[in-house]
Length: 307
Image (tube, rainbow, N blue to C red; front, side, top):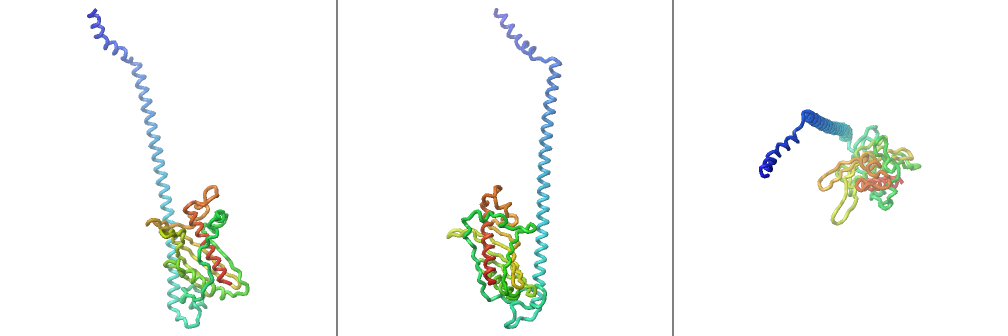
């Protein structure tokens, strides 16, 4: 009995090997199955690689387009600034070449020409202007959601106000508008570079470049504001004057990080209002409210100054 058991134990490995030994057909089938699995894995790897390459290519193309767009916009802005600088420089040279104004002369020398000139003497007449930012609409959320409250003309944010002044001559309105804009650009909230930049007395036109503090909130411990830049142009004629406000930009400093923003890409409905058009977005919304209030103050002051 003992010998029989020993013999069985010796034969057991051979029996197991016999059971696990594959026939040639089974080996072929196994190899084919492994081949198919390898092919499937290769196809998946190729598909994943192609998808990753396509996404990377799309990102590069988008970045390239964005860079090209920024380059184009930067060049356009540089050309515009160069043209303005050339115009101001030319006007300054003409002003310097003109005789000095005598006592009692008009505030602008060379007013009989058709050229734009830089005003040589600041206005001294006080304009009855409301230069403070209005706040009565602060709690009226729907006021700032009104359709058209941020008007766009040719893709640019532009506000225009025409004031009727029956009986007033173009010269009279020009003098009042000049005094108002001069006072406006000399307020306590104004920054360097804010001034009446160009005038054309013969055409009764005035251009002011404004750089000022637009305050969102103020407390003992903090002051939240942005540098607000824009251009005002007043054009006068007998019985009527028009004020235009455009080229609105913001320089917003948050802990040393300055964001340069345009009104077109910051306070319009697309960027400052939620998709349902039911509320203003938190950050761009406060810019929209403050800008509308400041615009209203300026235009109301202009109306008062012409009375």
